[in-house]
Structures are given as C-alpha cells and as structure tokens.
Length: 150
Image (cartoon, rainbow, N blue to C red):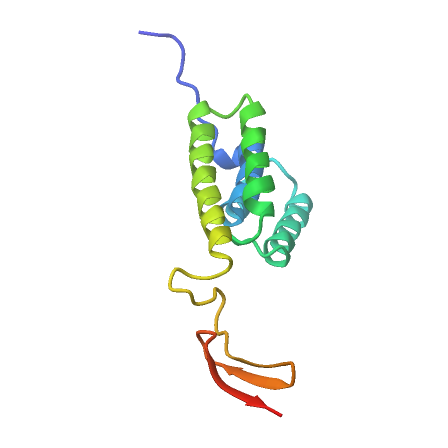
C-alpha cells in the first residue's frame, strides 16, 4: 500500500484556462462555471458575466457569424493547449467540437443564408419591392406572386 493520499481533483470551474475556454467556446456553460468558481472575486465575476452576455447577444453568436468558429473557438483551444492544468483529452474534445462547429459554419456559408429547402434562414421572405417602375409582391418562400407595372 502507498502512504500517499489520492490527489483531490480540482473542479473544472476552478481551473482558470478551462473556465475561460468555456466562456469563449460555449458561453452558457462558461457563465455557469463563472458563478461557481472561487478564482475571481464577486465584482470581477459580475463584470465578466456582463461582458460575455453583451458579446453573446450583440455579436449574434450563430453559425452565420465568422467570429465564433474562426476566432473565439480557436482561441479557447489555444488557451487550453498552453495550459498545464488541463489534460490533453479535454483539448482533443474541444478540437472535435470546433471541427463540428466549423463544418456547420461552412455548410451555412455554402447555402448562402438559405435552408436546404431553399427557404431563407431567419423567417419569412414576404415583401413588397419596387424595381424599374414595377411593384413585386413576394410570398413567404420568396416567390413573386404578383407584379404591377405603371
């Protein structure tokens, strides 16, 4: 038998690099960890949370926004890679998740903002537009349903 006691495992939210990576890669989990952590003081946690929420909503974190899959997620992976406190299998997990997000981003970019059934992402395309003296009426699927020219 060994005289050594088994090392206590540090929770993920008390590892600074992993917490920051979660804030960059997937803000909801990062915010949860931010409130449970003992790393930052309460005022600092409030400031970080406000900043993350502003970036999350104002930046429009979606697959259509290139900042997320091309800058923030790779930055999170880099921080994990350079950290001595994070195991390599966690870094590999983040890399796999990033590859999936990157593929989804590229597919979305290839579709040009349309769904697979050629409807537009984000809702209805119904509109009235005027071009060259003619008024065009479009339905929800962007088809011209009526045209009136002067």
